[in-house]
Structures are given as C-alpha cells and as structure tokens.
Image (cartoon, rainbow, N blue to C red; front, side, top):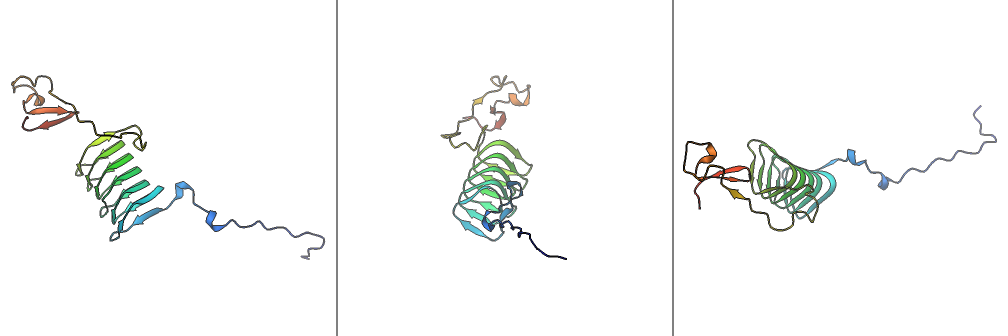
Length: 181
C-alpha cells in the first residue's frame, strides 16, 4: 500500500546554520545590566536596546538606552534615544532625550528632542542640533548665551512687568535673577 516503487526519494532541504539566525531589528531583546552589577569600560550596543539598572563606569554607545531608577552611568552617552530615571555623570548626545522625575544628570545634553519631567535634576547645558549623532556637528566650545536686558529694564521703574526689575536679565528665554556684575 505504501511503497516507493519507481519513485525517486524527495530531497530534504538543508537546515539553516544556527549562527545565521538573527531576530529582525524590531524584535531584538533588551540587554540588561542588573542592579548590583558594576561594569568598568566602554559599552557598545550599536542599534540594540540597553537597560542599565546597575552601574557603568565608562562611555556608553547604543541604539536605545534606558537608565533605571537604580542605574548610574559615569561617562559619556551616545544613542538614538535615552530615557533617564537614574543618574548620569557625563554628557548625553541623542536624538531623543527624556529625563524622568527621578533623573539626575550632571553634564551637557546635545539633542534633537528633549523632555524634562517635573522633579528631574539637570545640571549642565543643553543644545539643540538637527542631527546630534553627526560626529562633526557641534564640535568645539559651546556658544555662550546672549544676555540682553528686556525692554524697559534700563529704567529703574518697578511699576512695570516682572521682567522690568533691574536685577533680572533675559538669557535665551530664561529669566536669571540675582546680583548684577
């Protein structure tokens, strides 16, 4: 009933080698540096997702970087997107930077998009660039902010607006109060 008279055996296709099977980029797994783990040196995770709940003492380069509540990076960061819930001591260069309410960043940020939640601490300068990941963009010293007196600040008339106070100066859209030099 089940005979193979006169038939040639079917060939079975070879299985692909295991080292050539990679998940598509949209399904890549997140690499996690767990709480209690301390890494010293440069971490490169090009195009990959990286979550830091431990500590990295060195520069980090990756596709998408999340620094958890217990995470800390002591070094410079270059990534497509960065979400900071923990602490960063170094510069951040990314297309999209988000500082959550528990974030503490000590360093400069070069970004295309920046959001800062209420409660986040940021000590440094931030600079918008159309392409912050371009190595030649933004090279050199940071441009000092332009300080200008708001209209009406030349007079000592205190009956005007809040900006008319003599000790207030406008710095790139931010009011800086304090003693004049």
